[in-house]
Image (cartoon, rainbow, N blue to C red; front, side, top):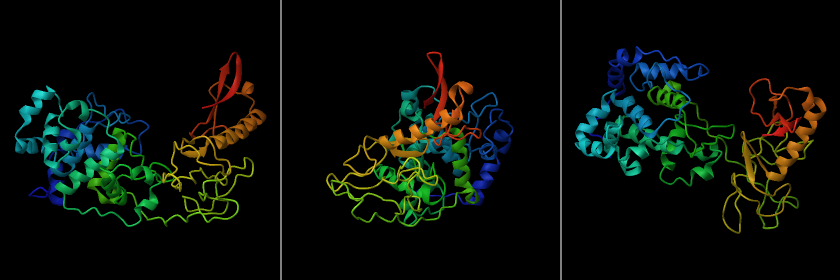
Length: 377
């Protein structure tokens, strides 16, 4: 459904500028540590697209709710009073208030009927007060953008090559088109080096501000260059499993577009030269038709496969491979940094190096029955 009247970009900017005094007068005092998001938060607040939670707080680390995110997206195109205008058009605000009582988001819910979003989320405030998943965020923001704005958001050919968890994204039938639109246009993109979209994850209010800025200011959007399609593994005598599945081997091109190497110390395939695993994701079983993804169990005997395909801090490996990686790292730590010689709480990365720069922690020194040990996290 398209609105009868779209709002040109210049008119939209003028509308948002009118709210600068009301919203921009507030200075948020809780943005320490969010330098990357501070400009977007302050700019979007000044334009009336978002507001704080009171007492000069923005709560950047809080999950953004469905109501909050929908309200932001509407304001991005129609100004700070757009929900009131649209709810008046719908004409059933009193009915929603009778269901939800005195809820600040009633007008947003009422206005959302204009875009068909209540078919997805209903009218009850309980659902609208839940944190928005990244799949839901794509649906909300792209639905509103398509119906209120003039910009056409095309889906780039081959965008699936950029999405590390495309097999998971493709299972979100109701959201998939919107996810691909948002990803293609640099509004919502990957969350890790593999470009995974993480459709079930929640986003923080800080991220929501950045998304809104990308929506209204194309110069802030992320550059999206289509990656080449991954080269499928070629069978030889060493990489065909018992079920007939053809698995990656050393030298094949991995999901990141680089040759797969084997770590010289652990022997783990896909862990050489700083690789983070994930080389089995998307491989299809000829028996069941299912694809390997995080949480899958091994189908047959090949290389170090076995147990569950596990993800930690962006690294993905089979459980036996995790065991090898951890054993080598702990041996190195005990050799170079014995637990009894460092403070409790000292952390180390996946390679057994003491963390000094905020890298993801995989090991920590803990007190176990009066003895300091390196403990896998």
